[in-house]
Amino acid sequence: MIIIIGNQKGGAGKSTLTLLLANFLTAAKNCSVTVIDMDYQQSISQKFDKAKVLENEEPYQVIPATLETYPVLKNLLARNQRDIILIDLPGKLDDDGLLPVFNSADLVICPFAYDEFTFESTVLFTVVLRKINPKISMVFVPNRIKSNARYEIMMEVNEQLSRFGKLTPVLPDRVDFQRVNTIHTPAILYPVIIPVFEQIYNDYLHGKHENPGRPNPGGTG
Image (cartoon, rainbow, N blue to C red; front, side):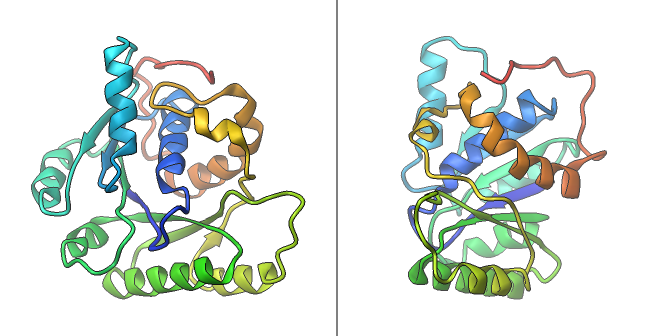
């Protein structure tokens, strides 16, 4: 299965969400995961390289890639049908190189926030993606939500996005998310991420990608 994590809006939390999902699927669900880092900042690849320098065991592979190299890379990775491929997309829509990425994906996970600009960017990203790949499943994750803030457009946003796909529970704005890396998710975060990722896993992955013969790469941190 190919899952893209994307939004046209920069700073939506795509890379952190990709790491959280990769860690959850390997540690909690014993899945075989490969992460393709297409984000311009390559933050996931940098964390992965740092972990290798420290000689930590790698629970999954992280591959830095570009839109140009994706078609060949996809064909190589597709040989193992049991792998879950997570793609951290660049934050843009104006490149034809996105077409094969969008067309090959089974699921998109779209982090967003409850402000007008992010909402407009999210809808544009969603409409373009659905036009290119009408069969793709969509999940929207309210991300970096402040508990003490009032979001006047929350109900409207939820209603509009629910026309395209499913919404998950909220991920709060917490400083602990900055400590997530390719080896480990802090245990203190599991109570807030489990409802989000259990929903995604049960709705789209359960029964398809378990790998009982694969050793558990680690605990919950």
